[in-house]
Picture 1 (tube, rainbow, N blue to C red):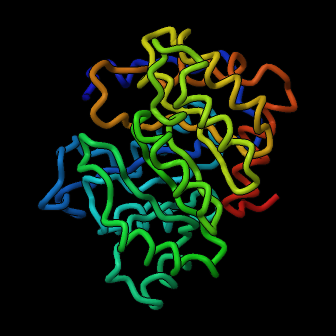
Picture 2 (spheres, rainbow, N blue to C red):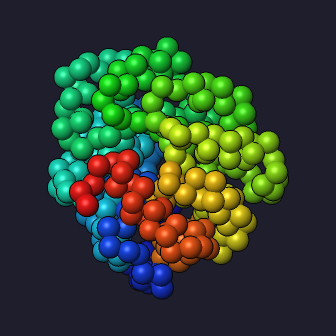
Length: 284
């Protein structure tokens, strides 16, 4: 959602450490240069690379992982263009299908891509073709890439068997979009915690604004439990520019939430710097 007051937003009170990474953000268009997919489920307002850079300048973010959003489909050019603009600071996660050959994968790798994203969320189209899913997983096994899984909470338990058997590292977006009203003992979140303890599982403790309302108190115990369960494999991000979010959010509020999600300084260092650097290959 567009926010007419965005240019007047504040800087966060919490100062991000040097090398701090926004490990989940997007670029949209501009549509006149990078058209949106004909079969998209939503049409966002343009949020080009310059808008992302301005946000990160305001927040004090040094690095970013740009995640391909469904509105661009498998046309990854907007994301690749942004990475090429700041190649030492940006990495990417692509959306691909079974038409991508080795040459296409190599071009993505050369362009800074380190993972592929699969969307299972119902309002965005639902589960992918599992034949395509298996084909893509097989393609990335030898590349050192990972799979990013965007799930609805109700699908965490049913899909947990498939997820556990993945032969590559995987990242679960937005804390699995859990329903905070059901508490941390709900089966979906308990299964998420079990997955978090797997050596190849990473989880993003972002999306607090999707599972709770400002000041995001309801999201805190979920994120904190994930950080405590897997301090060396959790990531944080803004989800800028918050596609399909009903209420505008100031990303400074999300930054100021970080000390509540990761209480110890060493956990914040891992969450914001060390973990994304290790997964995405940022230089020390």
